[in-house]
Structure formats: C-alpha cells, structure tokens
Image 1 (cartoon, rainbow over the protein chains, first blue to last red):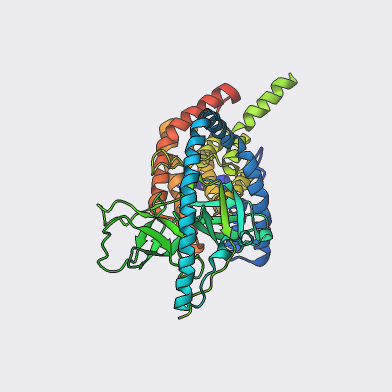
Image 2 (spheres, rainbow over the protein chains, first blue to last red):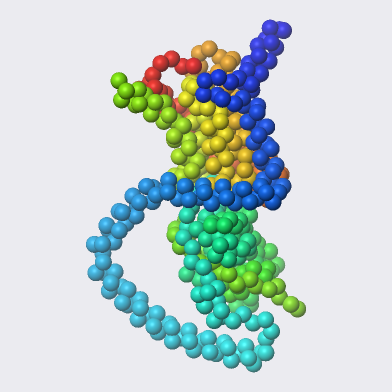
Length: 292
Length: 170
C-alpha cells in the first residue's frame, strides 16, 4: 500500500518538476508564471496594458501574414469565376445603378422633409446626418483577423488609437451595424460582434417604436430580449439601434426579425453576415446620452 | 547526409510548427459554418499526444509561448490558454511516468480526464476573473468533439511518428 503511495507521489512530482532534453522549464514554474500573467492582465495594471497593446499589434500583423495563404486560395478561385461572369455582372450593375439613382432622389426628398420636420419640432441634440456622412468622422478599416473562435465572436481591424479610434465606438459595414470596439491598441483594435455572447445593444423596432435589447447568443442570429409584455410580431420588422446607451447612432439599421411563424424565438437575422467581413467603418462620433 | 539530417530535424519540428501555426493563424478547428455546434481543440490533442509519445520534440516553454499567442489572437486574458495547455501537459507527463505500454483506449481515457480538468479550469477562470463570459454549452460541445476526434488524430499522429520520426515511444 505504501509502495503504491510512493509511486504516485514520485510520478506526480516528476510530472511537475521534471526537466531535461527539450523540457528547459519545469511545468510547475510555467504554471505559476501563467497564473501570474493571467492575474496581471485581468486586474489591468497600466504597464501591463501598454505591454499587451504592443504585443497585440505585433502578433496581429504576424497573424495576418501567416493567414494569407488561407485567404489567397479561396480568393483566387472566386476572382477566376467572377472573371467569366463579368459581362452579366456589368448589366446587372447598370440596372442597380439606375435603381440607386431613383432611390437617391427619394432619399434627398426624405432628408429635406426630415430636416423641415425637425425644425418644426425644434428638437435639441439632433444628430446632424451630414456629420455622419462626412468622411472625416468615419475611419475605413481592414479586417486583419477574423478567427472564428468557438467562444468569442470578434474581429481585429488594422486601425487603432493612431486613427482616433476609442473604446466603445460603433462599427458598421455599408451603414449596417456590425459591433463595437472593445479593445484598442496603437495600430489595431478588437471589435466585438453583435453575435457574441457578451454583446448587448438597445434597439427599437416596429411602427410603435418598441424598445428592446439585442443580445448576442454565440450563434449566427442574436435574440431580442426585454420586449414589451405580450409583444406580438405581426410581421417581419426591421431592427434599428435606439441610441439610448449613448454609444450607437440612433436609427442605424441592424437586421430583421426572422419568420413571424415562430414568435417565441425572437431571433434577428443580421443585414451583415459577421463571417464575411473584410472592410468595416468605425464611426468616430461619440453620442451623448439623451437628456430628458 | 547533411540533407538527411535537416529533413529529420524538420520532421521532428513538424508538430511544434503545427502548434504555433494553429495559434497564430486564422486557420482553426472551429467548423461552425459546416455544423453549428462543431468545434474542437486541436492544440490540446497535439500537446497531449506528443508529450506522451515524444516529449523531446515539444518543449514546455514552446507550449507556454504558443498559449500566450493564442490568447492574444483569440482575445482571451493573457496566460489562460498557456495554463490550460500546461495542465494537459502535466497529465500527459504523469501518464507517461506511470505507464509502460499505452494503447489507444488507455490514452483516450486519460485524455478525457485531462481535457475535462483543463476545460473546467479554463471556464472557471474566464467566467470568474475576467469580463468575458463564455457559455458552458459551447465548452461542453468543444469538449465532446475534441474527445470524439482524439482516436482519429491519435492514428494520424501515430502514422506520422512511424513514417517520419521513427523509433520507440518515450
């Protein structure tokens, strides 16, 4: 019996402390070091944050280069097939441009009407839509890393504090909301996508402007929570950011509710597929919280 | 002769290169696009297998650094993946010290214990000490599929070992 206990303790100690060959460090010392680094990082001392920011910038760049073969192969096949479909695509695009022209006229009319109505309402803190459209308040960024982690849904972009990006800023693609900046380095930033489990966005929906919270569930479609009691989806409705948190621009489109047959699921189909992001825009305007 | 020596060194470094590449690149073992719940942790299988079979080709220092890189790329608190990998490393070392001749079944069983313990530690530390929240259901799926795929990868790595590295098990 005592021999067995000795065997156990010898094997246990050896597994923890053994060195030699390629094992330059004992596992115990590395475990202690890893715990030390973990708590330093979690409790966020300034020096550690700055060091991490530099490490992040370097590793994101290296990761981007290392992942380039995996991006090149599908891109090459895509461009080859698109080359053959060029003529057809050209005709389609012409038609789309015509549609957009007519839509542009409608938009101009609606913008003017909106401005006039706002003047009538004499609203305070009205967001100037021209500011949003103005390019100096928008930063175009390339997606460096789109590692599809099973636990966290985030992307890394190639712009950071150098370009004026700050924590919390909304990120869009084609004016559709994609997520928000959660971590900023000097040359890069991490964007938390709407599908992440940690994402919570105040939204508004429907003709009665019902308020709700769009919650990421870790799956493709986020869910609507905290809807008004007994709220029934009569039809497929579009979800917009309400801007009540003072972060997101009110009225930024997010997605549509899925089929109205299953009202209990409250799933929202996003306008932008979070797995297909290559360029995004960061809105540098910081909203102010609504004053009542 | 020198060329042969270089090739040997290259093949010996193969698992370590794969571990580093998986940590730093976008290529990952998350196949959610194919099947919504299908994710598995390939680095843990690599570490467990090679520490068990050939500890000389996979240093613990390298495993520690690969974990740190993985944390940066994934956006986890620094050190959490390193800790997970080192726990797996410890279990693998212990099994190697205690056993003389291992089979796929015994390795699979001991890997199950190592995996459960490592993922439990990961989940507890991330959920209790950081701002990040992780769903235990996702961890559960990840654990299940990692365990499920272990025998297949065990056979693949054994083939690699027999053909490119050679020699007896450690």
